[in-house]
Length: 610
Image 1 (cartoon, rainbow, N blue to C red):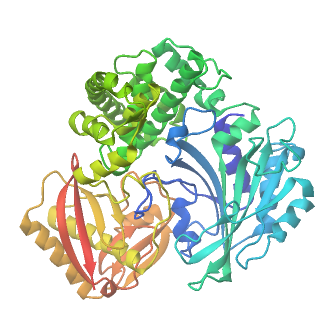
Image 2 (cartoon, rainbow, N blue to C red):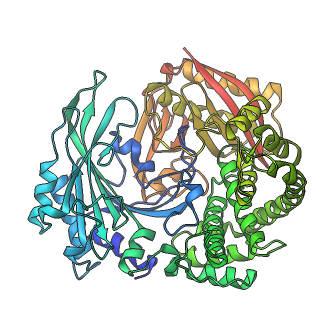
Image 3 (tube, rainbow, N blue to C red):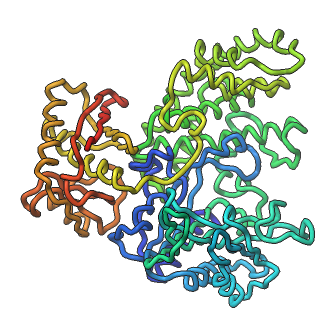
């Protein structure tokens, strides 16, 4: 089975069960300062899982592009990926455990759908903890479907629990579905969830049934939700009885092109990296394929950043440069990623047409970053080689962090590559010393270098809600002052400030900034009501609602109007929320800074003060 076939089967199955297909969202999440990328299929659905009504109804299904970089150093083995696709279905206050589990089981085992033998499946459920009882309800449903007791494992909170997003709020147990890939158990206690590698998790059903209160206790939710996720790449490995995702059709065409460009054959060697040249070559090919695939999707996203030294742009730069580095290890001297990107675009343009629409940007940015990095590599590696004789004299085999920082500061040589070069020569870098030197020189984005690969969920509290509402006022005020060419290009909200990116080709004057600030505060002072309506997308546009360029919308959308009536309003936008009920709650709006974000895009940083 191919990835396209699995994607289609999944969507069709849940449509047959009364689910509405919704559009997957951007890789760059809106108004969530806790994470740089969309890290899971449920990420864009958080407001609706928290109580916001979804315009498409209570039963939803989609496929979502995701990126996780917390395991970036592990990429190159058989299983880790930075970019992956998640299939998901949701119940927002509709069905619950019994229906959810039975639908999952039917899709997995029915001959009409995936036809996985029941004896290959194993299950984990929540064992109970902190006053919350064991999830015997889920276990009972699985048993009724033919899963024997010896293939149901009860695991603690760290394995089978989701949430809450903050210190309080909706949360609940999950049940995870595993596929047995081994030939015999690792021991008498080998059950689903065992770390021996013989059980591969393919699906996760989260049951949001509790509200965690400030005193740490849990109370049942009146509105219970289901959130599920199935990884396409991992499931394809299972369905096709492959050892690795790199052995499937998902990567086969790209690997062939890498072989042509490098002249190095991919052997799928069983040897561990370090045991043979072939194993090391295979690892480099896998890293190139994974990192380029991720980079193409980031650059092809309508909100995707360009390579930079901060935030999501930093991750993109690191992925591209790491791919280039491994290309050089395979003997490639010049630019090679752009031609390879065309293979990915052609393969994935069906489910993700934005890749084809943005192919010029993808190839141009890759080429530009490659050339820039090749210059950096040549200088940095030359300097490292000059330092190497003295470094090898140190019996501790530890490279000074200050010396590594000098390579970064003087030559732009990334610390990750310094660490790789050091490791190749049997050394380690004093990373703590490097980080201390780096912090003195420059502060990274709010995520921070020590947190840049961590993920989380956005703040849906009152402060974030007020800032989100303020972005609508700011957007319209900018259009009033600068012109209707202004379009929102992104936003980021924390409890302390808002950041708003918009299209405009010149710095704003002090007078323009003052006008915008005054207009926003006038609307706040008027205490205008904020109203939400659900309507068709074309109807919303005809009514004057602004929809973000390039954003994927469902046929039915939520439209937020800030004003006294449908005809007497200041702002009308298609948006998912959340929003304040009246503008008077926002407080005083102050613009702190206006600057360039990227070519043709300006950035405003502003605060609300009560």
